[in-house]
Image (tube, rainbow, N blue to C red; front, side, top):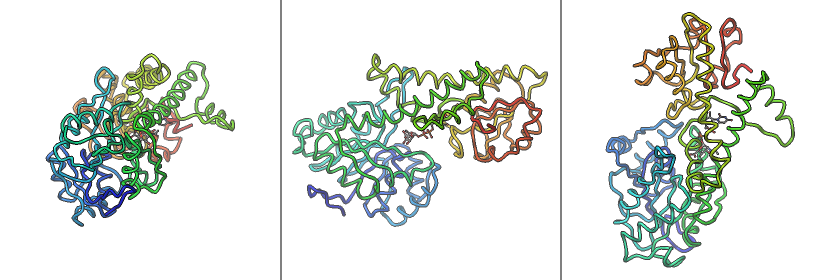
Length: 420
Ligand code: SAJ
């Protein structure tokens, strides 16, 4: 039981959406002694969690979930139920037109409206365009006209609403969820203070209080900043190919300047955050967000550039055998979703450029979309034996350890600087 500054009692938390953010958040809250009910639309997810198991891969998450479920503090359900705090952690994907799809947020907000009560706190954690927290508060007010909300009654409202964006790095979620500083943007001061009390139960970093709109834009800004800096590195790599300069040496030398810190070029930007969130800024301020848009386009164009180079290189051989080293969206993880490495490998097979061998030490089986095209999964030594063209798409630790001489006599395209 946690008492907030304004004497709000937090016994029970309802987390809507049990994905990469919702599930770790629910499990960590439960491990701090709170009663947590997690809600998900997938019956399979609900059953898996109620058995004390997990449906997503993240170091140590299985252990924390198992402990919380067996201690009776965490359970999953398909419907929201009454609680002191509600956390929305549902997806905010991109539409075909690169605009945010807020339908999951809207559905989640409407689903919890019936169980809201006086003194409830609703926290939106999903990455959201500016104004979404205000939209959630409007929807809730529409559904529950007898309760007052911050847009009507400020700090004296019956229901409090805040935005607290998640900022954890996949692969380090359980560490970062506790250690990172947390931005807390309430629709009123009372909303921010109530949300701060909840996060203080498990966050060791600083809790930084601000408005909901600033909190929304801060999350988008962080990922846009990163996207822009990766785009700079990717553009440099293309410039260097044209000017016949080694980009890895160039960056290493330039980074010796005390105020220069260039990121690493790659085959494109993958994952579900950095390649998505900058579009939320562009769609809200299309005439102003010119650099942010160009960075997105630059990074989105990189897989095609790499593909053209591979096709050109393979052209040297009568029977091209192409080894694609890495399929994941970044080093040392097994996540293939939104991965430029995967899309390049798939496109090579689709075009029938040659025999395609895939090496991905973090998976046991190839996804259907590759195996059905005749791509075979193998290990690095077999691939290097058989291939005449080698493409390094991910800088997994297994590839960094490969002896340099295993690449001699091959045509090598090293998109990650593993051999640099
Ligand atoms: N990448 C490069 N070059 C680099 C760095 C990254 O090509 O120098 C590529 C990676 O290979 C990968 C993509 O960018 O394909 C994104 O990888 P990442 O490790 O930079 O970030 P994510 O997407 O795993 O997580 C990001 C993080 N945001 C920032 O670092 C600003 C994380 O803190 C956020 O919580 C997460 O997005 C999110 O959920 O928004």
